[in-house]
Length: 421
Image (tube, rainbow, N blue to C red; front, side, top):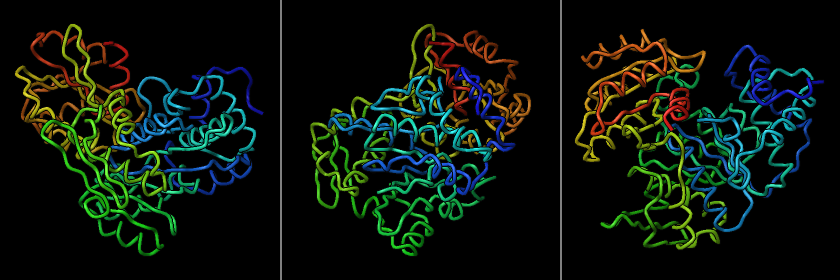
């Protein structure tokens, strides 16, 4: 039996100790504990996988379900400020009480079976959703797809946002190998949307091998942006014109929104695709730590870009927004990330760098990160001893006409947001 009356932080510390590996790909252990939990099958399960854009896509899908009065549970990771953000019931983060009760139930069911932090949290989320009688589940695949804990639940339809290099130590060192892993969320006879216009061969072959129904951006659904920022979308059966601009910043969000609409149509939810409701839902979406701007004593921009594809999008946004002041970047990254390429993509839009150690056991030490940044960018990089020191120095070298970018990891953006807000 598990200890009683532990707080949520105490429980989280405890489950981190249950497995020697923070990441341990495989489904057998999770599947066995899920079988013991004996949870009812929800009406509908949608999976969202991919390298970037998963959180945005889930948030958009959630908003559309809610706009139509449908019950929806969303499971995403990691969180920015509080663990509760990972498990949302009808748009509201689960309470400590709900999560603690779910942890207790998982603990009783696992009966000594080792689970990682992510696996434990995934099972707890499924318990929370079952307890609340949620009919529609949106499950974000944490990493990869084939052996990710989320994949223990069979989806009715799935979406892969894109495939680029990330988590290479676990998923592979090239796009095609990673694509094969992400294709693991496909199911025979079930629709799967691939939302990027450049399609890896292994996405095509995997779908063919198992007879999944693959829907491709630019072939099975399309979108176009009008001069006033409104946009049009057409799928195999539905067409929506004059949609409002998505509320999340960045031109790439049109593509994320288009993929979300294609997933809903593919899942047989055309009744949710009403232009006025879709516009209202998408315009209402916001996400912490994604192109998030905070203005007080300084102009802050927080973005969790932590791989080259995300850094490219961030660089394009910074380079095209017409900001006239200088940009000082505070950055932290984890040890499985491609620091060199991230810095190369951002260096043209960053005037000064500050390296700090992220709040994670997998963080690259600030001194090591600073050396890489200086070598790649040919610019001096201050090595800060703490986040507080980094924020203080950034304020010292900027004025109200400049901006401070905070990027590279959820484990930096979350604590920074909490400090500056």
